[in-house]
Length: 219
Image (tube, rainbow, N blue to C red; front, side, top):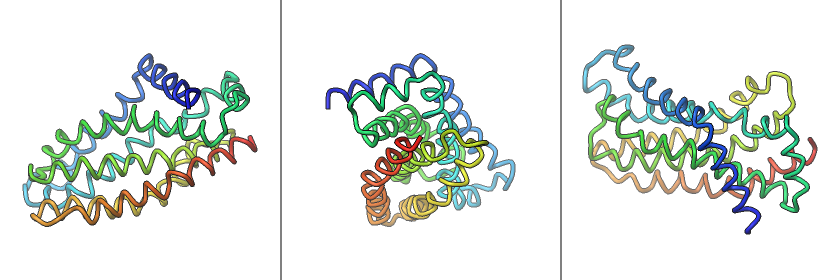
């Protein structure tokens, strides 16, 4: 456990030294939310109706931006080989990468959710459900993205293959997350949809790192 925490701390230190990926993801998320009123019109009712799906789609696309460098930089300088020889299981290395991705990308997107929600005229009472949905969806994407990044490591145009591999698998997170936000906007209970989203995260938590570890072992 100490070795795993040390690896996680290393990933967080690297992210703090190079905050461009986090900043790019947050700016992408906010800018996409800001573009919707220009594309569909400024009518408050239209924006509020589109807000749940727009928030989820924009957040997941923004979270994809740093994924192609998750293992690539370490593979280029030989750090990845050292990590795989450090005594940690490859699945544990992948899980630390996924946790670091959520903390450095998913969490900032979560904090930026009220700004994007206000731009899309989402009712204030639905903001807590939106933040919960985006946090869980980002965690699900971090796990799926770790497996996808490991599978496409070393592949030609891996940055193009990665979204094609990950985004179809993330569709259930968009459906449940948007349904939860929409229910909260209508004054209904969002908890069932958030629990379904949490179930997706719970299912991916053991499976995605195992798949990523197997791919890293092959690499």
